[in-house]
Length: 409
Image (cartoon, rainbow, N blue to C red; front, side, top):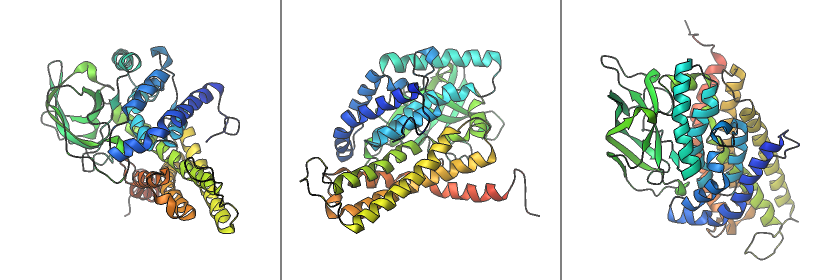
């Protein structure tokens, strides 16, 4: 998707991204229809990723991982999304546990003692991932404004000797029932104080912990293989060493590293590319399992492909720029561009899929072909917190017109 020379990628980045693409193309693509049809988690793909070292792609090199930065991970995830959206989207939840606690946390302020404790704790999590193939989820949504950053999380952690007691629930919890650990964002309760976003904790709760349960069905429009059922936490004891970030660091990250909330977008960048790829192969008579009938000679088809190519390049351009400049303390322009990139990818992926269906015609609606699944998967992206399409537009308009602290008289 992103030529190393044209996009100025180094050899190490190219190797990791190529590994992701080749594994997804060879192993994940043939299985994608099964995960979607049966709404089951792609565990077989995760075993493959563990063997390939991709579960630890963003684990720091000092801890035995590949040490991929934000940009490198994003490009690798886009390549996986190109072949299996559900695998890419759930892999994002897993990788964020290492990306946020690793290179992102390294950019944030901690005193020496806090940083030493953090490095000791995260090494435990990284070892589980690299050696045992442990899968980490990242349940976020609760059905209210917390996931969008508007209020404190309703899931609460009460301090007790040696750790916390956690109570609450998470909805649309991808990997529920399949992950080994849930990276739960919750609010530490402080006696006599109102719940505050400043007291957000990021805790890795073992799936086998007493009081953890998975409830409800999972039969959605798209992204069926994510198996995002509801998680319930009832009086779950979580030890201190389970913290993925020290106290106060998540809130600092949310304020200073806003691109951390853009990591859903690579999956949809891959889906946008997949729609274009399918259309070209279909019109050239190169879709496996179909008669080699060419349809490329019709001017209407050629114009449609041209429109798709233009839109795809527009999406890739703004998205690549945004993931490349992701950093701590971005400028106002960089933040606005991140919102714009998120909106462009999430809406554009489905627009490309819709145009692909119209261009390829009736056969493209068949479930025996991937375009029908790509269309359904891509339709869901604009709905996903914390940066839904609507929130992106709202924030772009407001933050473009107001400087911090400005009000109308």
